[in-house]
Image (cartoon, rainbow, N blue to C red):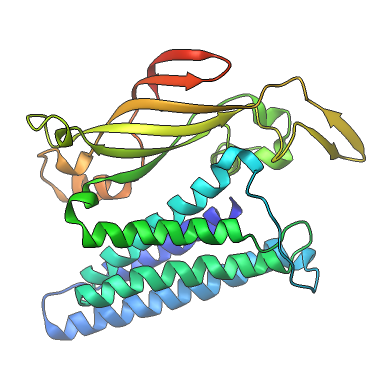
Length: 300
């Protein structure tokens, strides 16, 4: 999940570069495209350099190797990879188009940039002790890029979105080094608190529904203190939380597409664009094998 930090760093830098020089004139359009390519290149090189020096360099094994982590963290890691590349592909394509590039150019860049970015991280993993090149991660990355491509080709499918939410829980206090110490760190590292949602318009099923109303199906986990087990070796000793149940959780909830609410204004447009990938809190049904069905009056 550390890659999320550098992804959002690159995202913020790219957003600044692509929105600061937009104009209708051909001259400014060319400058906007130059800023876009420069922003992408700078974001990629700077974030990768920072990522390697702060995260990978101390653990460089010097030998490329593979690592099978497909069964870890209840699949949340793979969903995170899928979602991240989808977010990135969506953003790259839309920002490239807004800079004046053609739809076909924007489409190609929306496929290429996320693939190069995430594949570089996987190669870093392949040369690092304690990790390795994960084919599961690679397939999940390709899946997110592929979903973005399908949405481009099938306009109706473009109304669907993948969203993220986070709910505080007590698990990070038991293993803060792995699950995070601060609030922002836990949002990136604590899979137990994260949830990923597939949101689709209710009007797909009930045509008379308002266009902003969405139906969301979500997935998360609970009680995971380690990738494969709650028994682990840390600080020169074995720690046993084997009695803690590891549960997958499935959610059904409502959501709102803020972009479809008829409110005018630049501030509102910016707000809805920034939060278009965030699940809106709403009443939620939760399904858990060991807890049965629960109703949360309001869940993030």
